[in-house]
Each structure stands twice: as structure tokens, then as C-alpha cells.
Image 1 (cartoon, rainbow, N blue to C red):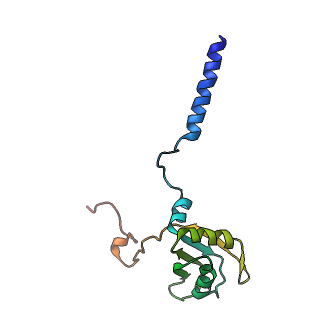
Image 2 (cartoon, rainbow, N blue to C red):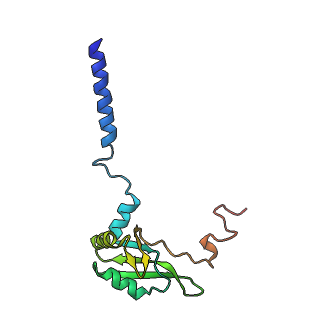
Image 3 (cartoon, rainbow, N blue to C red):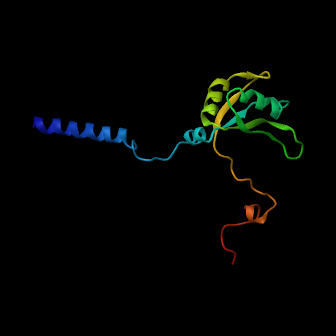
Length: 141
């Protein structure tokens, strides 16, 4: 009787180890954060509405060369929405900037700096093929 109990314990231990190590050495789905870190792109929110794209660029250029800084604005008014995207030439610079600036005060506001994935394709809302109102992926009969 005692040998069987020990054997069962070893099997359980082996199964637990297999479950814990699952995915190691096997290509797995990258997490959003991993994908974003590789893109070198950051999402910056809680900016003052008065902050300019140039000011954002100056702040983030202290950590490396940026290839793009995009302050998001309302289409109709041109008013800042209080967030921006920053794309670095070297992804490691983006990580350093995020580590240094997330939670810091900039122009009297607490910055939130998060990894951002690659930009989505722009959708032309006026285009009927864009999946707007009344469109359907089903064939019309």
C-alpha cells in the first residue's frame, strides 16, 4: 500500500510542474504589453488641454529620438482631448520614458504613460464599406 501513495504524489508533482512550465520554449501569444513594448509606442493621458504637441515632444525627446508625436484633437474644434501617442525610434527608449514619466507631474497634472500597440487603420466614416450604419457582413438577398 505505501508505494502506491508515494507514486501518486510523484505523478501529481510532475503534473503540477508540467502545468507551471507550460508555454516555456513554445511560441505563445504575446501579451498586449509585450507587443506594445516592441512597437516603441506610448499612450500618454491626462495632459492639460493647453499642452501642445511640441511640449509633449520636448518632454519625451529627453529619453531618445521620437519618430512621431501625435496629440489627439477633436475633429471639429481642433481642441486637445488631453492625450497623445509617442512613437520612439528605439523601443527601449519608450520603456525608459514610461518608467521615468508615468505618475510624474507635467504642467500641473499627473501623467499616465502606458504602452500602446501599433496604430489601428483609420476608418473613413463616410465610406459605405467602412461598416457604418445600415451595412452588414451578410449577403444581401
